[in-house]
Image 1 (tube, rainbow, N blue to C red):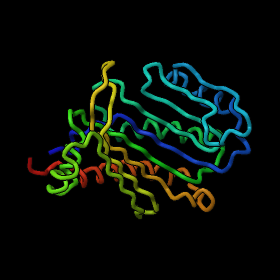
Image 2 (cartoon, one colour):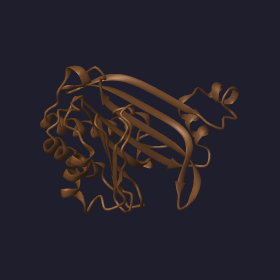
Image 3 (cartoon, rainbow, N blue to C red):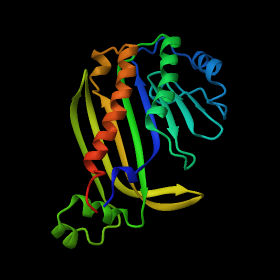
Image 4 (cartoon, rainbow, N blue to C red):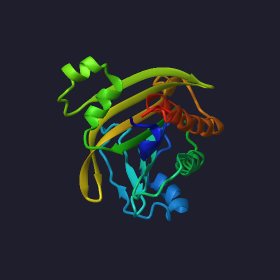
Length: 239
């Protein structure tokens, strides 16, 4: 039976949302970020002018490292700081969160923006030949497996809850699904687990997070994501 430790982290995304767009210009954001992080984001820069009618959440700037492990997506209303697995070296999620979080903190302070909503997304995968069968056996009664899901090519389970985690009220989305992943220029079947923990949408109008709250949120949510993963795929279960 699949365990949490069998799922490999391949994507981590930290996001901040702001309704304070008055001071945003692409040139200002680009100058601030490259003045400190040009060595990290040493790949191609994408910075194209977009029409005014394009939604404010659409990135105006994309920065990335040459090895594509680190990526920044900057728009007037949202900034995503991402890590993407590019090798098979085991990396601790706490270390990645700290790296991705640091650049967001610098951006917030340098641009002098307020932050009104927060989110953390993780994607983990387990390469397997029959992910749909693995998932149906995990989450369905035997009679359903035999009668309804015996020939499933794809399978997905999606769960949403709202939780109080210390001083934060958050949406917790967990999506377990069969799919395909690319590895060594080849495509493989895999079981994919996506987790999205974010503060409520109404926070965008009602809440302003200070820097300490932002640091706390990302630290707490990465721990919560691991705890939730253990509930779905316990490491101590009997094979």
